[in-house]
Length: 381
Image 1 (cartoon, rainbow, N blue to C red):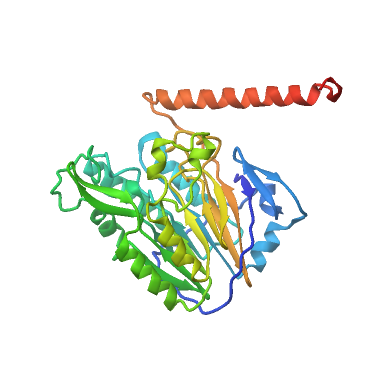
Image 2 (spheres, rainbow, N blue to C red; image 1 turned 135 degrees about the vertical axis):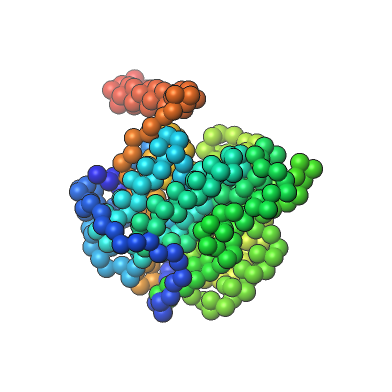
């Protein structure tokens, strides 16, 4: 049974011709979606703790919205496919939930961190994770477009498990195995333009090859003219590391040390390019937390992680899931879709067990405080 939580926004678009060039899987069938929520949508909602909470405005039939849409597509990110914690089985459950949708999406944008990790894992283990990702994703039976994440590159870290002169170090290994000619590219689909970008910028350091979270001048120059050639078509961009991320504020620590790897270093020139063109949304990943941020006419949509906490339970209340996007006339709307998966921890996963315990205690304390606040008479204050 699939759980859905919704958050729809409206932006402008237009119609046009069709085209795509993604990877195709084999024919497959899925189980019908039996959850009642799949037949109800809330046009203005907020996702909190993995559950959909209605806010303002009326509600409409999600089934009707999907039927009337020109086309639908997915944003799936941070899959971190691995054998440990049975992550490959969890990912298979995710793909089954896609196949069970009442209307099949036209394609999926894969937002990066597809394999569990190439930075710190042995090369053979990383190769197995890539193969698991590809084999399972191919069963989805729709085109999919891969975006490189920081865990998708081999050995770009001082803790690497490969020699610095390994011929596959960096992007090469995963790109070869997934059949990617370039790490950034674009395509058109039914009048919309889609741009897949690479935020993992390779640099050389005293400890060997590493990466910085940036696009780089060469890619930004390419992006300028790619968007110019799109001639005003409504556009969606995909990046792994975000242009906007508010983890510091969310954690009440704006100076959080990890923030310098949570956003791309050149987001200002990136945003200036987007704002000159008809870009409607930027789809982001990396943080494993939902954020929707609107700035200067563009939505920056961060999806929850397919793997949540690397297949070790929910991540700060966000369950495993992905984003479904719909185009209709001049509108783009979206909602979040979860799938059922019970985490399978390893014997050594004490840290994850403690994190789950703390989360449970936090929710219990929140409920206790809420009950106190409701039950105390207003006249006492």
